[in-house]
Figure 1: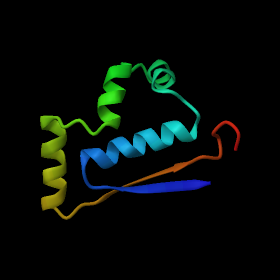
Figure 2 (figure 1 turned 180 degrees about the vertical axis):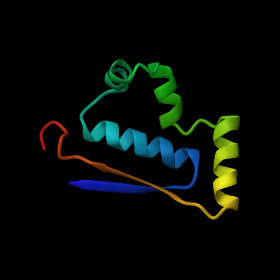
Figure 3 (figure 1 turned 60 degrees about the vertical axis):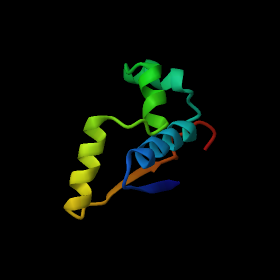
Figure 4 (figure 1 turned 90 degrees about the vertical axis):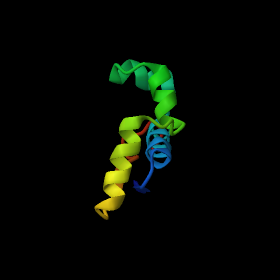
Length: 80
C-alpha cells in the first residue's frame, strides 16, 4: 500500500518520518541502528523540533510557493 503526506513545516516532516517508521514496525532505536543516526536525533525530528536550518528551509520553500510531498510504500513492512 502506498501512503503520502504533505510537508509544509518541520512538524509535518517529523510526523511523516514517524509514520513511515511505524509502518515498518520499527522502534526509534531500530531506525537509529539501521540509519546510523542517534535515537535522540530521531526523537527530535519526529517531535518536529525546530532548528535554525529547518526554519530557514521551510521559510524559503513557502516564499517560493513550494510544497513537499513524501511518498512511501508499506508493502515491504513486516506483516503486510
